[in-house]
Length: 114
Image (cartoon, rainbow, N blue to C red; front, side, top):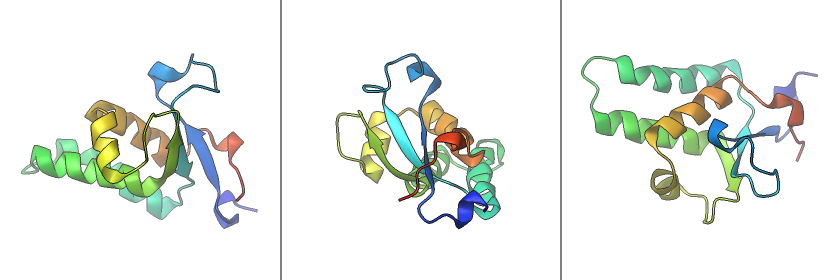
């Protein structure tokens, strides 16, 4: 069965800078598995940085909002998961790294059914 037909299919993703940390303490993000429609949305946001006439605020806000929508939560981040917390905890480059991974459904071997 395609993974997207599984209810609540999620997978864990983390930043490259955290990959060597022990799993028990590694900052980890729980991402929703993405259909082609979801992938299109995420990858379009990633492409915004190259678009003419788009402001920094537009790119930052849309990137933050897109990541928030693609995640179910996070662990080992030292705070509650929220739209505002994403902006306080991550750099723009880190948000883009996570969006690329989620947009390509990386780490799918560890998806969980809820």
